[in-house]
Structure formats: C-alpha cells, structure tokens
Length: 319
Image (cartoon, rainbow, N blue to C red):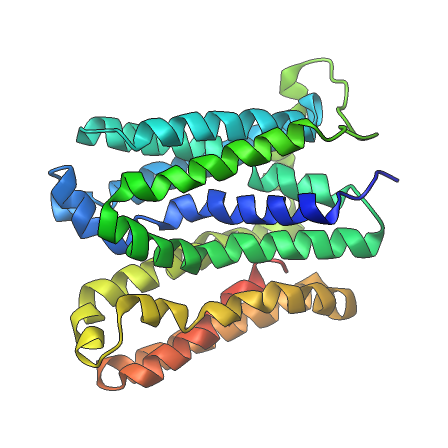
C-alpha cells in the first residue's frame, strides 16, 4: 500500500486545487470589465471563459494518461510550474489576442492538476483515507465555482485581473516545490511500449454502455451552473442590488451547499454511486424549477432555491 500524504500536504493540495479550478470562474463576474479593458464587444468577452474551458477539457484527456507513463508527481510538478509561468505572463497581457491565447494556454496547463491529483490521492493510504482525500479534493473543485467568482468580484473587480492572478502564482509555485520534495512512492509510473498505448483506452470508455448515459448530464451540469450565474448577473443583477443584496452575496448564499461532496462520500459507500448521482441530478433539477418559479418577483426565494440547485450539483459530481 502506498503511503498516505501527510495532513499538511493534503491541505496544501486541496488549497491548490481550489486555486487552480478558480481560474475558470474568476472572469465570470467581471466580464464587462474585461470587455472594456481589452476593447472587446460585450458578447465576445465570454471568450475568456470558452478559450480556457475548451483547452482545460482537452488537457484532461492528455495529462491523465501521461501521468500513468511519467508518474503522478512528475506531471503535477511540471504542470504547476508551467501554470505559474503562464499565469504570470497573462497578468501582463495587453492585447485581446494575447489575452485569449493566454487563457487557452492557462486552461491547458491547469488541466495537469485536477485529474492527476485525484488519482494520486486515490492510490495512497487506507480505503477510508482515500475516500476522504478524494472527497476533500472534490469539495475544493466544486467550491471553486463560487469562491472563484467571489474572489474575482472582490479582487479582480476592484484592482484588475492582474492583481488577482499574482497570489495564485505563488500558490502554484509553492505547491510544485512541496510536491517536488515528496517521494514518488511505489506507484511511480507504468512502462509502456509507446506513448499512444496510454491513450488507447479513452476511446474504449467512449463506447462503454454503462458510461454513455452519464456523458450528457456531465456535459450540462457545470455548464448550467456557469450559465445560471452569468444569467443572474445579466438579467437580474441590478434588481438584486436594488434590494440591498450584492452580487457577491447572491453567490455566497449557496456556498455551504458545496460541502455536499463530504456527505456524498458517505452516501456512496451506503447507497452506491448510481443512486447518489441520480439523487443529485434530481435535486439540481428541482432547484432549477424552484428558481424558475420564483422569477424576478421573489428574489429572496430565488436565492434560497439556488442553494437547492447548487447542492444538487455538488452531490451529482462525486456520484
């Protein structure tokens, strides 16, 4: 059995996971400011999300199998160093082209951490330690959806995106340095006859009947989450603020719901992943129905319903 990471290393990895995934969400509340800063039409400011998101998704397919060949720690350290360099450069980007290209490179480099960190923790310690390590990591990934937006609103919205990125660079570099000092462990790398061998199973997974039914919900789940808060800002932002509720508070009200993965870790052991995922999707759908029913006439009810929706998302993802 591989050695369980120390408590301090686990905390640092969870904190780094939060900082990595937050990169996707930081621009959400400041899209109008980015459009103004880079002289982009308002409808094109969303490229800051799209460029990162597509590269991030592609990177997942690259770095997971690559870590089988090179070792988990090697890929995480190299990816975090690259991410720190790209993020530092992005803070100084002046033109729309450099900014969008930088976001794409940032998204690709960011993908080197989440899947590999999950695999790293799932291979170390007792079964109970593995479950809770992955549960805390999942909580960080999901919490970034709200904490990243709040951070973007508070820091990037006030001082600019560059100032918001600098502390993250320090987190990536510090975590890379810490991981570089940790022994790789018994599960270091898997010899392969060719690089292509590590990627061949991806196509098998696409055809797996048991997994095909989850691809569409998985595609829509976080997409709808991002769209929900962008839509809230665009259509109800001023109305919410007129009732004495800031846009940050409108997001923060749902933050406790992102502790749900910790509950899901116990429920999966008792009910099984299928039932937990099904329950989570049902709760998320019900929350969206409540939000739609509340509408703009009942803003407090809409925000209360958003907690139900976010909790459903947070339960669904680990399942």
